Every structure is written in C-alpha cells, then in structure tokens.
Image 1 (cartoon, rainbow, N blue to C red):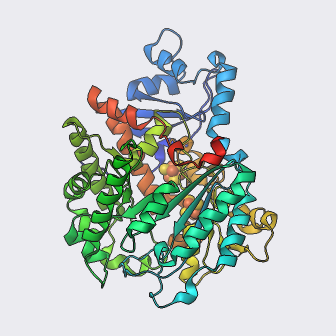
Image 2: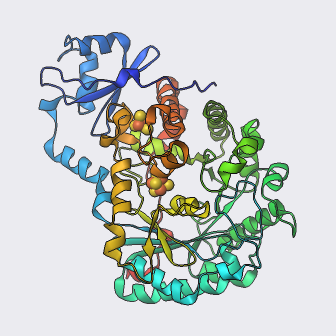
Image 3: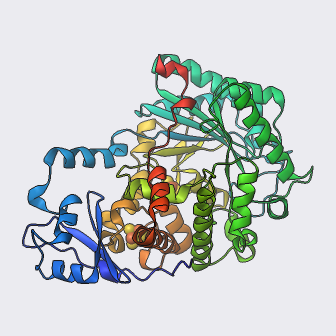
Length: 505
Ligand code: SF4
Ligand code: SF4
C-alpha cells in the first residue's frame, strides 16, 4: 500500500539502439523489473534478466521477451508504417488545432474566503472587478478566432454566479456567433453553487451548461477550509448537487453522463483520511474524483505552510486513495479516479486525452487562453493567478487592443511552448515516462524561478514520476479485476452530450 518516493532518473540516462533492429528506447529500473518505452507511447515491462540480454544484444527472434518487444512496436523491421503514422498523428493532433479551452473570469468577487484561494478573490462589494458586457463580447469574439473546431467556454471567478447577467449574455452571444461559425461549442460553469437558484438552474440546464463544483470532503474538512460567512458551505453545495442531479434524472437524462462534477482541493486536513474523502464523494452521488496536489500558484503559496505537505506525503495519500477506489469498485460501486484515468488513457489506451497540463508542449496559449475580468489575456488560468500575486509575465495583451495573431504567436506563448516541450528538457529527454508526461512552466516559475526549471529537483517531476512508478507497479501485480477497472478508465470519455446543437445540424 505504500507509494515509494520516486528514485532518481538514473536508469533512463541512455537511449539505446540494438544493431539498428530496434527503434530508440528509454528505460527505467523498477525493482526486479525494467520499464522500456518508445516514442510511439508503447512499453514493455521486462525482468532484469531479460533487460540485460536486450542491453547486451543477446536477444532476438525466438526469445519470449522479443515477441513482447515486437508487439509493442520496438522492432524496426516489423513496424506497420500506416499504423505508426496514424498513431503519431493521433498523439500530436492537438498541435494542429488551436486553443479550445477559453476560461472566462467574469468577476473576481466571491462570497467565500477559501484558505488556499487559488483564484485570488475580491470581496463581494468590489463590483468594479466584474467583467463588463463589452469586454465579455470582445472575449467571445477573440475565442471564436481560434481555428479549433471545438471551443469550450468555461466560466470561472471569483464566483461566476456573482456576475450572472454577464454569464447569460456570454452564452446567448456565443450561441448567436456559433450559428455561423458552427463549431463544436460547449459551456461549463465552475461554481461553489451557493448563489444558485431555481431560475438560474433552469437556464443552465436548458442551455446544456456543464456544472462543476468544489467539494473538499465531509463538512468538518470542507467548512474548515472553504469559509463562507453567510452559512454552511458544505451543506449548501451538496444540497445543490443533489438538486441538479435530480433535475437531470427527471429529464430522463443518463445519470452517468449528466451530473455535477465535483473536485476536491487536497489540503493537509484531508491527507490522513483519503478513505473518508472517497466515501463522502460516493455518499453524495459522485462517480468520480480528481485527486490533485495543492499547487503553488497565487495565494496558495502563502498558506502552504499550514495547508501544504510534502510530495512523498501526497504520494502516500494517493496510493491509499487508489486502493480504496479499487476496493469500492470490487464492492460494485462504479467510481473513477481521474488522475489515474489520464495516465492509463495514455499508457494502456494509447490515445492522447489532451489534458493541457500533461502533454508536450503544454496547453499554455496553444490549448487554452484565460480572459481576466478586465479583458487581459493570459496563457492559462494559472498564469493569471501569478498576475494576481503581482507578476504579469504570463499576460498576452488584452481583448480590446491585441490582435489574435499577436497574442498567440507572441514571445510569451513561444517561450511557454519551448519550456514545456519535453525534448528540450534535459532530464525529460531521456526519461522513460517522456512519451506520456508533461511539464508546467508556470509551476517551474513559481517553484524554481524560471520557465524551464530543473526537473531533477522539481516537485512536479517528483509527483508524476511517483504516479507513473505507482501505475507500473500496479500493472505488474494487478489481478484481472483491477486490470479490468484500469482498462475501463482507459477508454475515451464521452463529452458530446454537452455540445450545443447548432454544431450537430
Ligand atoms: S503553463 Fe502549466 S498550468 Fe499553464 S497550461 Fe501549461 S501546464 Fe497548464
Ligand atoms: S517531468 Fe516527467 S518526463 Fe520529465 S523527468 Fe519527470 S517524470 Fe520524466
């Protein structure tokens, strides 16, 4: 049940070629085994003995391990050229579209004072931090300039429901524009739900807006961190989650597709009891959880000392949580842990889920744009949070005066692409996890003072190396049931039910 602190990247220091017969590969020692990966994202787990034979050129046809290598696209002469091209195109398809996620911060106001407050809120009377109708329209115009055939407009804050008229206006304005543009358009709202009412909910459901909320655990954890002076945050959030899910059921919609997605922010308060957190999620009707480490962005950095924890502590927590999720599934509860689902989509499913923070290069500017309430543009929401802490280096301009082309092809986006392309990261270029991993320049900047950072000492790398190591250990020992669960998680998630109808006509 333990999650070992990841070993340094020693075993991955060389890229080998076996007399021209094998494609280039990277390896990593994992106890009695060696993981071997190639740039197609395929892998084999060999015993030490098998790996020694491979490294010494003593392996060839007739050897059982050789057939594993053949099946996983390591033997150059056996490659199916069309298959390889198709897989390579699929794994890099995000490079050929443009930003598809557009985060609209419609206000900085929030009625909560959460102690980690990533979004760096403003008090409720600060209506001057609301996005204006004019800025909202310009932001939507800007988003529609993206060549991406799919657009998601995501409402964030602050608390976006605090500026409800602008949320409604953006939806109507975007739908109008999309009658011509005919993109695959989706809306999502990230809200604490405490300013929800029936009229707003009717509208959101009618307009197919996906609703996401924050739930940090049982009341004693949630309310201790997510402070709300007007009432009990936990009970109100859970009340609205139940109401929204019931509305979907009343409309005859598939509850596995239509439901409120909840996300926890893992603080020290939750660290000792992952089982209680997961059981609570199940008890309020959730079918999934996304276990994320507390990030060093914005104001969270200042509260890290009280709410934070070390990466080995997080990995220990994660391992316990994972085992509990598998145990829930064994008891018949269909429940997904989304971090692991992302990893297995890449490792087992052989497809790119296009999670913007775990791809090479990352999504900053080329996969997402964040629109601040005053109209300033940022590489991503995390870059905007750094601005709230007083540093505007991730700002790309503003919707009133900056041309789309200048923002996207400007020096900031170029720098982000270069810093997050793993071929340019010395530690990553030789890492066995490179085919599936990604790095975050904003994280590097906050933690290590430069966009490129230094992965050998980075907590980001420590996290993903630990998670990939953990997955590989599970793949070595998992029984059929656990493998079946991971295989299910590795299938692509359906999202089209939230796509606006205009695109489907
Ligand atoms: S810089 Fe970091 S947060 Fe921003 S898109 Fe890239 S990985 Fe994500
Ligand atoms: S960030 Fe990912 S690819 Fe880079 S060294 Fe760490 S685990 Fe490997």
